[in-house]
Image 1: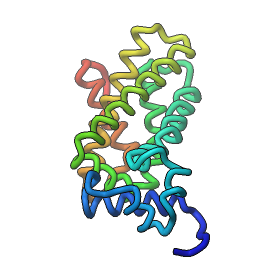
Image 2: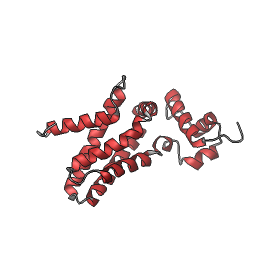
Image 3: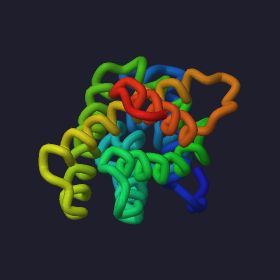
Image 4: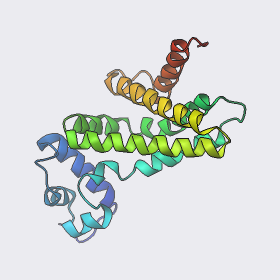
Amino acid sequence: MARWEPDAQGRLVVAALELFAERGYDQTTVADVAERAGVTERTFFRYFTDKREVLFAAGHVWEDQIIAGIEDAGLTLAPLDVVVAGLIAGASLLDERRAFALRRATVLAATPSLQERELLKMTKLAEAITLTLGKRGVADFDAQLAAETGVAAFRVAFARWIADASGDLSLSEHIAEAASALRALAGGKN
């Protein structure tokens, strides 16, 4: 093991994702991840509280980008359109990391405890969106409904993006498609 190499955190994320994909999440230990990354377990715990957090630690950056997109959205937009604008703003981060997102999604799909954690992350995202809409003057009921609907549309769009082997459409485009389909389901214009 080298005495010091740059980007230990990034190497830990890559090592963990590789091992989770190869061996399975439950069969991979923190020691395995640290060894693959060329660091000590102590170094691992400087960056992450546990091995699960390797897959979720960057979620706050994504959420912050979504919230910023909501805050920057036009004041004349309907609440759901504001949420969609925020989700599209956050999608650029995932579009840039498509390979990572694909591999992460595969690991999550194979591990029920990680699926549960992902659902919790989506619930917290909906809560953050609801609060942000409230700060924009949207009534509580409307804010919650727009947030929950937007997150549901995001989940469907994300699943389609992951399943799209060709990668022809960006996640942003999948989100826009889902929003258009929602409007059509509600009897509105596409």
